Length: 332
Image (cartoon, one colour):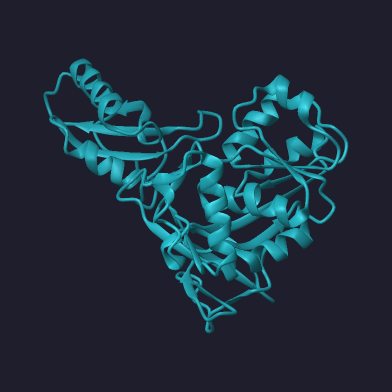
């Protein structure tokens, strides 16, 4: 949402006859002093959140990113541009660099391979990078990558580098913060962008950061601090995992499964890499339940009710939830 109301620029929208006129109206409003833009989280689990960012904060981040990627000749993106990550990298960054932007979201592997050129910056998220690693056996010279929305598996980046990707930079952030830190491969730690600092004393279980304007925000992850604005991630505070680039909450899915008839207990977690990239569920049925009928009922309910990213694609049944030697929940 472009906050056209701040300068009275929304009144003529319905009179405009072209999409280009809307773009011109947005650009005119920003030149006239619009101070904010609002993005909306995906809302896959729960109500979507509105996350407002000041124009100054976005420009500050873009100034940092344009220096970081100053040698890139083109931005080649496979991300939706209506979320903060895509808007920064596919809309603002190309303008700041003075380079072309290629929207590759609908291109197949062969078209991508033909379209890539030296100097490109490929922008996408971990699951799409996994698809690119499977689909492109070789990369043109001097093509770099950037990844965000979730930590990218190190084995995946290593495989991409082996196939010729020149560099990879991970950007850490959230819908609320936009970009907050970066990690160039092969480093293990992130470094806060220069306009962010940790709130002292740092709470590693509930860290907060503050920017130059005084805006103070909580990070979604636990961390281990290393000094000098450097840190490593130590797990999500809210239990979210990523499926297809979307944050989902396994505990919430498990709670909904427990409400189904004949289900005594349920646990949900992300599959191991060798199993797949979706959720899986362990179901403890009520005593005397017909397992064949319950399995059919659960799959039908999952497919008809749950959003795609939240659907467990593998169900395991047992008399009790799996636990480890210390009595804590375990994988299956």
